[in-house]
Amino acid sequence: MVAVIASDHAARGSTLTLREVSHRFDLEGQPLPVLDRINLQVGRGEFVALLGPSGCGKSTLLRLVAGLDTPTAGSLVTDGREIEAPDPSRVVVFQDPTLYPWRTVWSNVALGLEARGLLRTHRGRIEDALRLVGLTGFANAYPHQLSGGMAQRAALARALVNDPKLLILDEPLGQLDSLTRIAMQAELVSLWQRSSFTALLVTHDVEEALLLAGRVIVLSHRPARIKAEVVNSQPYPRHRGDPHFVELRREVFEQLGLDEAW
Amino acid sequence: MVAALTAFWPDKPENDWTYTGGFAIACGALAVAIAVAAFAGVRFAAFQRLKRLFPWLFALALFLAAWEVVTAKLGLLPLPFFPPPQAIVEVVIDDWGRLVEGIFASARLLATGYLIGATVGFVTGVAIGWSRLVGYWIHPILRFVGPLPATAWLPLAFFVFPSSFSASIFLIALATGFPVTVLTWSGVAGVKSAYYDIARTLGATQRFLVLKVAIPAAMPHVFVGLFMGLGNSFAVLVVAEMLGVKAGLGWYLQWAQGWAAYANMYAALLLMAFLCSGLITLLFRLRDRLLSWQKGLVRW
Image (cartoon, rainbow over all chains, first blue to last red):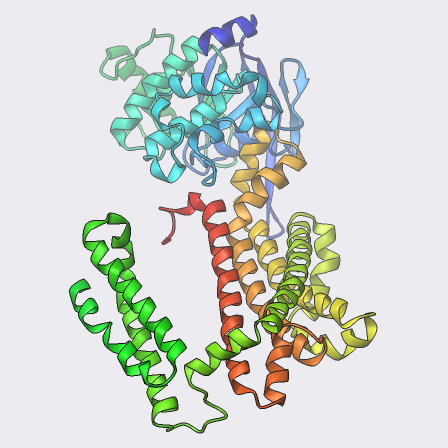
């Protein structure tokens, strides 16, 4: 899989630029602003985390990046092109794995290839993606037979099989137990390092953001504005107990207005 | 249990022997066959599964015996209306030509009407569930016309359509189509929007969303509709055959009653029961094949 991706794409990962992006919902006739003039620049192959209190509009921002919704104002550009509709080069892994219950793990992973008519030519990639997430033996299992962690791995494989240039992660580990979570965090980093797509992670877990991302964008309460940016240039794998890590974590908590409680 | 059954079973033929030879012999043969199977069951695993049926077979034998006793033997029930079992066997043997003809006529009518109704209902349901425009136009019609029992159309259908056969097909299709449409529609409308989001981010076209996301996700609902439609279609079939079509089991039923041939009536009823339950079983098999992924998700 890694080799396939590497040879397919010399220039891996896409760039992403958000210019003055604002968005609001209509709630029973009342406009509800969720995003307030977000400006963000993400470089090729970067791992950026969006951190904010729950309900602040992080997931809305990701839906805009994915092209599932269009912003009320502002523009989103990837690789020089405006984002108008979903595109398989930008794949989302949602908080809920949402595997199709009527398909086996194998054909769930095959979904993207099937949708684009590539199943016949790129069949082998499914096996590769399953191996990458450690689900080789479960190709013929149905989703309800998987544990939460395995289902999320399958969802990850379903995303990776499309060889994304931008992987959008919407709290993908949010529903996992803490042990599985720690293991999956390490796996995500190594997947990102090997495949070097650009990654955009939404989370409300400070440690997770700092463990995985090179840059943590701290968002305010709704309507979300960018409050601060914390750069973590530590090499991987990072350790939660490392003094510099602890210092960064304190800094982020401070930005979130939780310094006293901490 | 097996031993007890074998001990009891051979008793019955003796009971019948004095009344109708053929019936008794058949019963005896069946009993012996089952007894042999019961003995064999001790040794062969293949017969072990039959064991589950033994209490039922036993009860059935008791019922037949009781029937035999109250009709042929003691004459407790008035005769033309309640013939003994051997009279029904006699009808099946003597009048099999007409009965088989009836089965084929009924099956042909039912199959045509049901398939048309199910197909049209399914397509309409998907269209309403998927397209707002189609929903806008079809939904009120469905609301207004759908709840009307299909049999209410009977008088109209019989003079609008060129033949009673095509009229009956229309009625059966109508009776099948309504539940299939409504349930397919509610199935498609109830698909989680997250399923569509996933497929859309993976590059799915509208066609893919309908065929590979909406329809498979709606299938459990569709099957509920198909079952309800099948039930409805039986009712309409019999009514149509009794009132218009000059063939089929429903017509035979009516005809037999007209001649006070009650044994023929029971025979037709029995065959109809076999036909209907056979078709339901068939549909269950189809569901089990298509929806096997639901095993473990719902009580199967």
